[in-house]
Structures are given as structure tokens and as C-alpha cells.
Length: 175
Ligand SMILES: [Fe+2]
Ligand SMILES: [Fe+2]
Image (cartoon, rainbow, N blue to C red; front, side, top):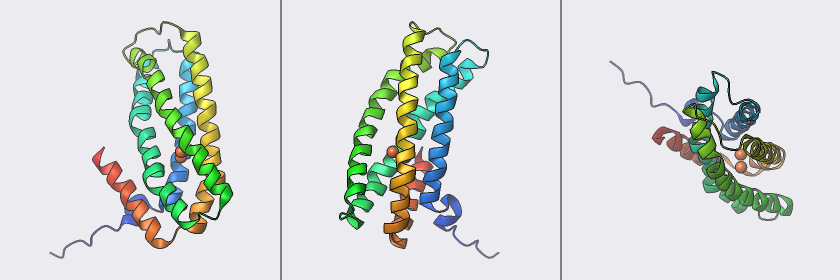
């Protein structure tokens, strides 16, 4: 029997820049879900939702940040150092990524408690923190959608995009 042709990278992850747009849309939806949970964490469904959000914060978000920090941003810096606005925006986004890691730490304990059906000691504080976190996330993804991803379409060549897709795929295959 003839051997099936090897799957091309584009068949599995598609265009990596389009894929990142898709993940940004997902991240904003997760923020909406987190905001709803913080408004009423006593529903029957709250433990399941909290467990799903915990996985998002511990797996999906860090993986997305690695795609940008390890591949997308270095390639853009190499291809378009003359684009001052882009370089400035990337610097800002990298600072925000470092803050994201701290925010995930701060949310983890509350979501862990909720995932086991336990109460949060200070619900008002949790809700306030979620408001800040989700506001920053929405602003961050919006800036990437409007500045960084259009720049990726403009500056990255085929080789860059294939390498980006390959690293994104390997990151997802190992998690
Ligand atoms: Fe980002
Ligand atoms: Fe992003």
C-alpha cells in the first residue's frame, strides 16, 4: 500500500499569523468567562468553569506568550528594526507578558479553590482583580491585532512563517 504523504505544516496549524488572531479571539472569550465566574462563583457549574479557566491560565496563555516571545517578536525585530512604532509596541507587550505571569500566580489559588467547590476568602478582591486582569488582556490582544500581526503579514517572509508554524506546532504537540 502506498505510503500516505507526510502532513504539511500548513495542514495542521494553517497560517501561523491567522492562527494567532484566532487565539486572541479565544483569549478574549476566556476573559468574558472569567468575568462571569467572578460575578457569581456559587453556581453548580462554577467548579467545572474554574477548572477550565485554570487550565487556560496555566497552559494556553503561557504557550501563547511563548509563541510570541520566542518566535514572533524576535523575527519581527530582525526583519523590521527600522519600524520604530513596532519596536516600541513590542517592548511594551513584553513588559505586559511579564506582568501576565504575576497575574496568573495571583489568580491561581482562587481558581483552584473554586474548582474544588470551595469558597474564596475575599470575593470582592477576587472580582476586582479579575476586572483588572481582563481589562489588561483585552487591551493587550487588541494592540497585537492592530499593530503586531499586521506587521507580521508585512515583514515576515515564507521561511519565517514556516518556522513560526513549526515551533507553534511542536509546542502544542508536547503539552
Ligand atoms: Fe502577547
Ligand atoms: Fe497574543
